[in-house]
Image (cartoon, rainbow, N blue to C red; front, side):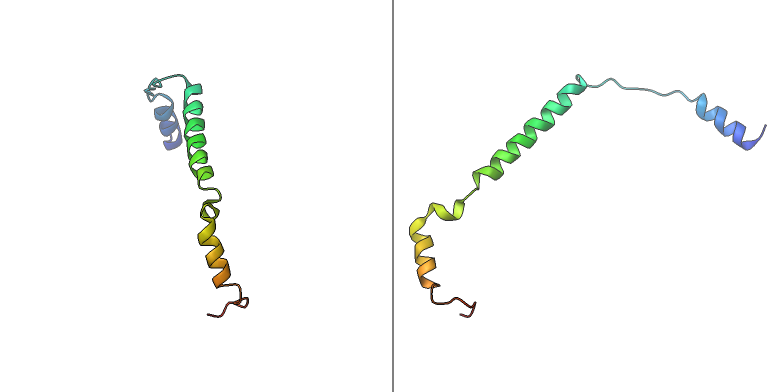
Length: 72
């Protein structure tokens, strides 16, 4: 018996122990989608945060209005 034959037969006769999933596979996708949607909502909630304080934004714009070229 050659080494290749011995390895092949040992691989083919090896017992594979399969475990059952905790729940149906579709629920893995549902859970991942729910997590993705929740994280998307968190990111969306930070949309336009800088403009919520108009007085601060206007004061910053007025302070830097004369400084168009990046110098301080």
